[in-house]
Image (tube, rainbow, N blue to C red):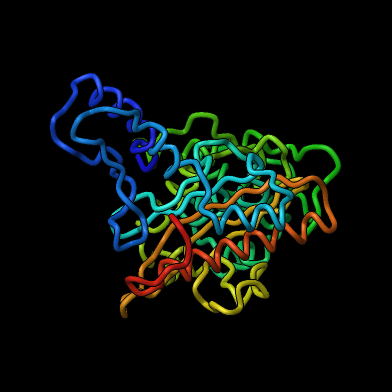
Length: 331
């Protein structure tokens, strides 16, 4: 549902051009109003020119600030980055760079595992699922995907993988379990496009776990719709909180408590997805986001990838918090 506005924009543009409409009209409803820092795409009155390039600029091109981050921290490998940012209040796509490109999930796969366990396993310990998400515990994720698969599809599983922070040699033997949980989750969001979505284990150790940014946003939106269903907590409160706890504890400390997210690191990938808040004119606004980076290797590349993600988060929070008339870039 979320990404339909991007897929339909090219069809709409073509129809409008062929009809040679005399009126100026906005054809990309995914982008917000000018006061939010994003300019709507319009077609000139005379119908001349090709608006598709303008649309692509807004959808699949980086702002000058974002481009600088990639140049400085990722050796200008633009095709190895993708992200989406979506305004929760009106479900408008604020930023999308290669957002429809399937990316390896790594531990972001745990979002599916956690929701399967929270929604379908009787008497599940919310506090333990919370710790699994915050600290990215692979062993606990392996256990929860097995419990969820049994509740959903009656699958009886061998013992779970037990190590907290490493992946086993070879693949975990829990493809059936992960498929059952993902099938259940996608059935709860039937209006979304799940093309190429694949999860093959509960922890995110499998290299064939893929989704795009809009699919992750659909999952975040579904989790949001559950309200305070998890022992009085929202789903976002189960995730790592920047500057406070979990795997993003020491990141973005200048905006402490504004980011609720799941990290995902599996060489060569470094990812972050979740929710962030920006306060503008006294009003706190909420956004879904997902950032995926494919790097060249570990070590310094991992450090730079995390700095790139941290820089993007800081920039977006600052941008959407800016007062009208302030300039933080060229969205």
